[in-house]
Length: 170
Length: 103
Image (cartoon, rainbow over all chains, first blue to last red; front, side, top):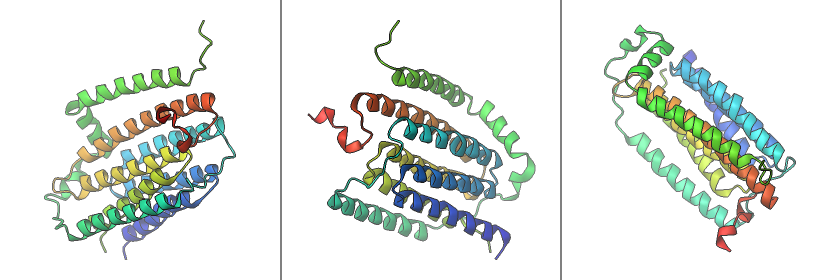
């Protein structure tokens, strides 16, 4: 039992526990809170995997921005809403069977795949993680990066236009 | 005891299945969006795990994760804007009452 394994176990428990509580709660606000726990422990997984920059981005974007955005979405609609599901039990059972079948198939695939050890293990500690990501993003992936900035701009304008009140055009 | 890649893939698989179940059965549209975020996060765990334990370790998986995060944030912003516009017109956030195109 190394420290890495203990940390992985606790983080996995928090991740899956948050997700399962998210599904089983009925109050919508409680769902978002338990989702925040899931997001933070996923950031812990990233740090454990040696991706510190992605972990910090996960905390900033997901547990900071998206959870708050979801809370705003709930507050601007029905903020004391309960979600009892669709109430259609036949559909729920069918979905449960489908998801369980998918889980079984992928579980079997993961357990039976021959995972090979990485080719070179020690070569990745040579540089700082954030510096490595920065060099790679601004040399090899510079066009996707610029396209992403255009996407964010379009999304900003589109979200403002759609959420604006209709009828007050002056 | 070393944590192997299949443990990380297991966590991601469970997260993905929970998200899929929530997205298909929940009634509130905000919760459906949240479940889709859970599925995207499961994929992010897979990408980062393969960028460490894959056949060619590197930062490519982490960069893909950053791109996925950006697209997910854009998706949530537009989705909530649509939801708020719909709530203003229809006074509902339940996905089974959004059936104008069926009538």
